[in-house]
Structures are given as C-alpha cells and as structure tokens.
Length: 63
Image (cartoon, rainbow, N blue to C red; front, side, top):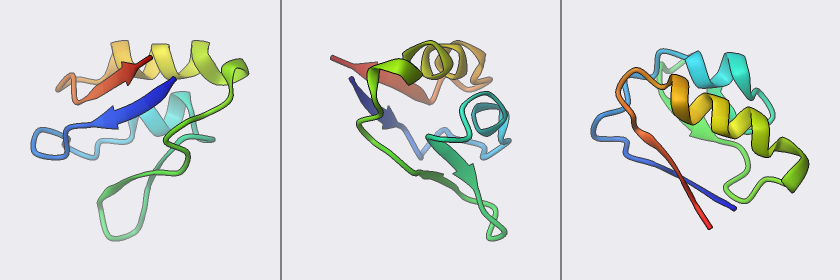
C-alpha cells in the first residue's frame, strides 16, 4: 500500500491526522505531511478511513 495525496486540493484540515496520526501530520506551518508513504498493513483500516473521510478526496491508496 502506498499513500498519495493531491496537495493541490488538500485543505490541511487534519481530519486524516485525527484518524491516522501514524501516517499524517498537519504541522504548525499549516501544511499536511505524510509521515509514512508506505505504512504497514496493520494501519490499512485507519488509512482507508482517512481516505474516505477526506473532505476534498485528496488522499488515495495505491496498491
């Protein structure tokens, strides 16, 4: 699994960080950072939840 974020549409609202803080982080500069582009399989459910919850649909999971 590989995480891809379309930063052109990402609003850095931290919904994903709230659901998968091991993978996503919105820092003090107001931008989203991917902490692990290829997270372990045990985080799949959290990442999928973050993908579904993203208000701008900026997060995609590639296999």
